[in-house]
Image: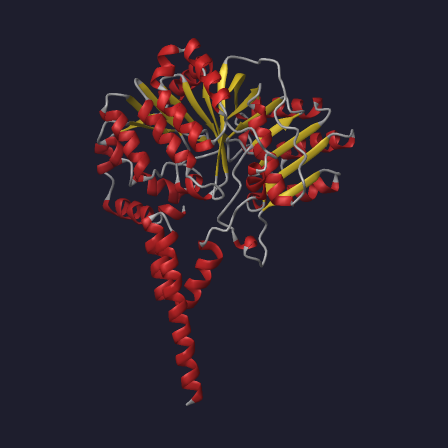
Length: 481
């Protein structure tokens, strides 16, 4: 009798917790699909579902650096004077473009609360063959600081070159700090942070797995790629560290093409700021950041850093991407390895195409994630039917991430067009207003498009029924891919 009563009480408590958790999900989850998923889990699997919801479903990630921004410790926020000055200079140099981009400038400013930084130079570096020598040279020439953040840090031949360079810099008294994502690091053995620490380099792992609430956030990863040397030169983009990016290596079985970018000018401070915030969050160390200093003009590019992640109040990248698509007047060129767009982004693509904008999308014919490819194929018809042109790039797998609007506005960085980048990962993109960079990336895009295969709506519809079913099932799980 008592045993039966205990079971009834336990069942009632489980049901009450399940209902309370479901109500919490309904109230605080923004995405209806996420609301529904957690609602079902909490009510139908009351114990396991509730535990899963409160450990990995509730966002408790709030960086200390974000709080310190409000106290001015990372204060390079936009103010009316700096915004008006940058905006007026942009208008003076590019009056026609500034007029069409006025709404986007306002969106970016209000969403990011970061200034538009003037007099920068942003140079594309193609594959590891160009990017790695430039990055290693910057490390070798550093005399004060080297800050490196990456998602993957393989300990193969290319990775060992970076470990050697970082260790050598640390040995000559340079303040070297390396931040590697704790999950991304697992792709290679021995672990990069272990090798770095043995060589005297300060290395930290972002959100390592641990039996704590914070340690269970395995779905929130730091996907940013940032290198800053001596606060004068920076590198960002989508390229990790590893031999896979040495595309011309004939022994490379997993060749991965990519574009990285060297940044000079005040925009370097945007890279430095995001690194130090992540370092503070990961290590808990006090960070003494001198803030923005005067730098010699490096070029004509106007730049703004875009930090996005589960610690931010807005889905910044989504808003700015939709704003950029809405601002386009003649062309939109997008290159991404993974394409699982939200409803807002689908609407942005299709609306731009319906307005007569030439919208082109280049994807890999086959990525390294088959499930993502399947989900993507089931969604492409929505943009193809309204005039968006889709091209499938042959091997090697292209990991490049580019947005080019009217050959003038460029967005580069670590984010893909998928839910993981736009909602879960910590990402960093850089938006650039610059005809010189736009022209070079336009030529690169056109070269890639020229050796890619156009995809038509008829070809997509001609997929066999098993493939359509497979792709549609994958689409159901797209919020979690």
